[in-house]
Amino acid sequence: MSHLLEAVDLFKTFRPRRAWPWSKKSVALEPTSFTLEAGQTLAIMGETGSGKSTLSKIIAGVEAPTGGELYLNGQKLNYAQSKRRCQNIRMVFQDSDKSLNQQLTVGQQLEEPLLFNRDMPSSERKQLINSTLRKVGLLAEHAAFYPHMLSTGQKQRVAIARAIILDPQIVVADEALVALDPSVRAQIINLMLDLQKDMGISYIIVTHSPQIVKHIADKILILYRGKMIAFNETERLLTEKQQPYIEALLHEHLTNHSQITGNSSAKVTE
Amino acid sequence: MDLLDIRNLTIEMDGPHGRVRVLDKVSLQLKEGEVHSLVGESGSGKSLLAKAVIGVLNPLWDVTADRLWWNGKDLLAMTPKQRRAITGRDMAMIFQDPLAYLDPNSTVAEQITEAIPAGDVTGTFMHRRIDRKTRVAQLLHRVGIRDHDAIMQSYPYELSEGVAQKVSIAIAIAHRPKLLIADEPTTAMEPSTKDQIQRLLGKLAVSQNMSVLLITQDVASILPATQRVSLLYCGQMMEHGDTETILNRPAHPYTDAMIKMSLQAHAELDPKSKLPSLPGAVPTLRHMPIGCRLGPRCPYAQKQCVKAPLVRHREEQSYYCHFPLNEPES
Image (cartoon, rainbow over all chains, first blue to last red; front, side):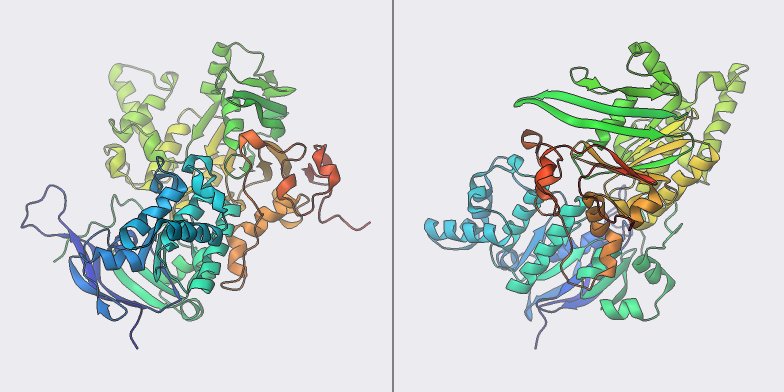
């Protein structure tokens, strides 16, 4: 039985600024391995500059890993296989204002992934858009709206609709919940949990809020300066004794830890 | 006497679809040295209230109030010049994104030096220069930055989020203001940095005898030192009063919902269970409900709610609701 998503020694290095091509690389992500099962939620936690966004971008195919392999359903997924990747792994961004195209109606935006990935007549596309909009709690009439006519919560719903319209197996949400109002945030979390129950989607959630993680995550992956320091089930991480740093991160008593460090991610290898 | 006394502040603006009341009869009192939190979702007019106090609203908007007093002086009756003098001397403001607020072209030291009042340093040219430099170092120490030499010479892009916010606080307190308005200073920050900035603001309020008006989105992120809380929704005041009382026995349904929706409350629920939330979304300016603006979203709303409720008092709290919760048993 293969895992839904399996990462083996994924890592990423960058050439530092003002450096020669042959000088030492700065490491954004040290070799990281993890697995994700169908219908489960993985939360990636860490401070700013710990490489959590880099990891999520590598999974979503925005950036190429420097090394390591990613397996989807037991088959290797290369960086260049964007067709297969974008049908199975979709991403939701932090700022729905910026991630939606202001020039297109909601219906047109939802149609785009179908045009590129599915071979279906326009009447079927319309039907699918209608049903997806209803799934995320909007009306079929919203397809004719432009993004500026919608409220923040509705825009986030459209972003989620765009992610789930291809019936993906994994949705990567990069800080998609932090900048929302409390009532909208609760609504969106409820929606995501409902969708998980109905469609069996797996989520990879990048966040630094331990309360949200405790609520929705099955597994937690903690990064510190690009290094994976913990990967375990939420229950076990919360109940068993952990390193002081992990305890602090999970229980939000972390203080005076990241004092003045310009960019904590830039670390030079040996 | 209250430092800041606002009674029935109303702001009206002419939109493309007619006249809109963006703030509707909001009252707020702030004592000297008090930490006051103003909580509301986006679009509730909490930043507008701060801007009305500072006096940087669009001059075409109508600002009317029964009282907008600063230390017993009426701010609305003043000439702009008199008002600027008071604002510049006694008030300061910090913002959500410190990196957008700081000047990218000059060093931290230059920016803090600009904010030090000219009267504070005396003597010859060299004396003044040295004095200013020590003052900058002092200010940086006061906001909890210890290696002042490195920070003074760095440009904003070199700073991390937390340090940049601390620098903006240092600039704000350089002229010893009586009131510091913090407009969502910790939203979108990670928990550890958030914690540092919150403790710093609480400490400064005590050590500088400065009032702090903290504006936040979430009940969970009010300062630990907060003495009083006000809740705004769609330009209407919902409830205000003593922090302890409000958090333990909220009278207004909105306060109740905000407490249940806060992050702290989520942690106590079962994993993957449904989170409590208000139905619907915050109404837009075009479609403001009449009467109590929470009406369409309120689970307890009845016929009377189309009339805006008057203020009612209960021990340490005041609320604007026809059907309060947690009534004491008589």
